[in-house]
Length: 199
Image (cartoon, rainbow, N blue to C red; front, side, top):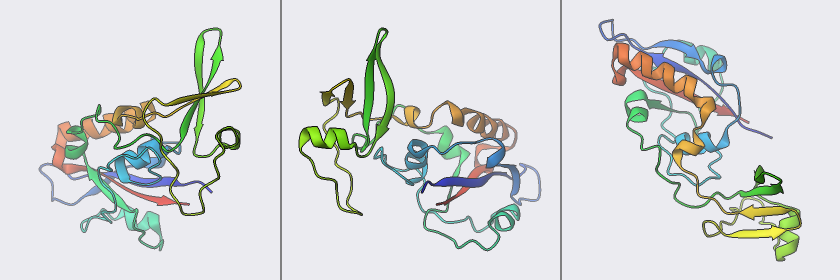
């Protein structure tokens, strides 16, 4: 079962009454599961092993009315959180993860060179070739030294350490641009992203 993100960009007017308002529902601007970004930003599905920027903060005490209405009785989970535009604007996007990705990156050779075909936390083909047994349920996936590679048949497996820029990729740029615009109008401290996750 996969994990989806929900939430709102919230803003309070620089010269208004100080109340937070929902500016946009995430489903209108972000349309994919993105575990690398979820882990990098919020510590959810953090297979890429980032130091999360804003994990487990819960809901802000002064959250906009749109958030409880959208949650409609859902329990407050430990992965409900938020992050301000002032924090995002200050991120070093070239900062690497604390360890290599728990999912080995897979490449196939083409006439134009190696082509990325995906990544997986566990590959039966890879495990059989190396004589590995799968981790027990709840155990963390193994990590390997950065840039370690194995060629198995037509597939090259590589241990990769991602940067924040690679994790929070192009699909997040419209959202970040919107927050930047609102921050320019109302002040970076008056824009935030409030999110929760559903399995």
